Length: 261
Image (cartoon, rainbow, N blue to C red; front, side, top):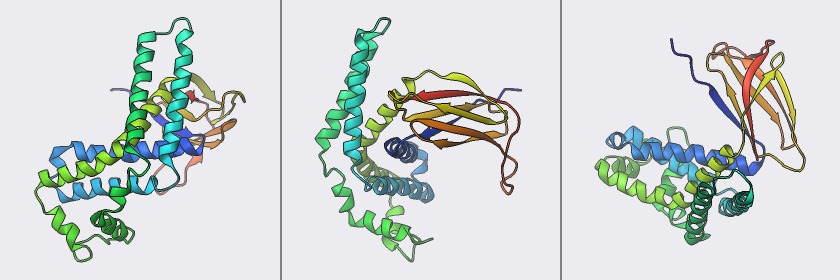
């Protein structure tokens, strides 16, 4: 019998990283429904794709996400350039990564500060967004225009959806690459949570942004994390059934921890 793969949990340690992870999560949903051409003839799958798009529109309305991404691109490029003079570094690979981030920055700059205005001014999307706040508010008698659009040929709906999603690509592709660099720029280490608890204090001169916790897939446990950029506490809870309250395990737990800056 195959051993279940480790289950990976991620914990953001600041508001910027929390926002980036949510953007990545929603963007992956939208891309999944957009890339699977078999879904488009099905109106329910199209609804899921549009819901993800509207979630992207909602999350980017909070604060200046574009500016945060541009600042993080600059920070990561500066950090990576500093590595070029260190021994043992694959300079060609490093330059390729920096060039990719520079391309993302150029595309996001070219999009302009008002890159989302065309979607916010779209009356059709605005109507679907407004009715989506009501349970069942987008059914056929509440929003007949949406029902009509869902009945159009799948190729036409996919083409229109792709045009809407393309507006987000400079931002979301940048976030995806930034998260990849953040995750890859750290070394995982094996740890032991004694009696299901683990505490870690980080260095003050190197604030962290993200924790990654890999738990063996065969264990009926998952981590609960609390803390900030300076210190964190983990406790492992035992999963019983969906209707039962989880309890903290009293057993030692082996897991893999990655601290990303």
